[in-house]
Image: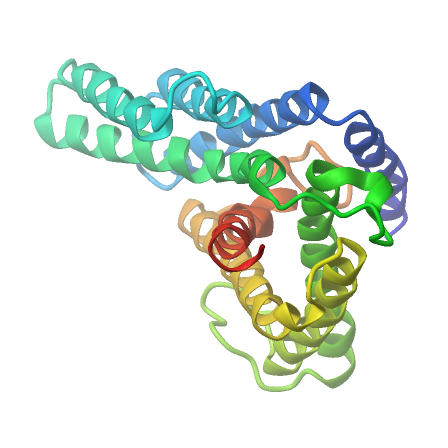
Length: 275
């Protein structure tokens, strides 16, 4: 617990600094996190018995982050870049003596790259989120910082609510083969906390807080699914954590797993339903 507290005392101010700077600083921070996450993903895939091309996968993931940071360069470039990555990684697979190994490496590399690059949706959300009106309580944050902070706080709210309620009232467990600590009580507590925080952030950004009735549970479930997805990857690799980078927390992937699923879902919701 002491290590976790020390790590949080370092990471939270760093996050606030990045959000305060905004713009390129956010893109750079996401790129660094994605690069570290990619290293951990490909290490886990190797431990799970899946060959890959880590350098190509990491390059593809970072390219997709850059595409999110500069969407005006080429419209629809995300799909185009993914297609180019599919082709290049397939060509790399030709060098494997066993075609089955080449196919497995091709698929694993694409999975690892696309999986960890989902964090780039934080950048996309900052770009497409509705402007914050001047009379909104959090108008000083602006759209980019405000919407990204909303996702960060929503995911943290889920983790905190699930931990506290699950620890106190948790009995019945679900999907124990992936993560033995997940309980239905924790899930309910996490959803309730997320709804509350999402509602407050929407209000602060000048949006209708009633969206939280749907966006809150969706964000909470996406965060939980992201956590379970990484747990499945670690279980397959026989690993407790994705790494040792952050004392008391594990690796970088252990810290961003929930965001990988929550960020694209919130972005889709905001684009489709929030004005």
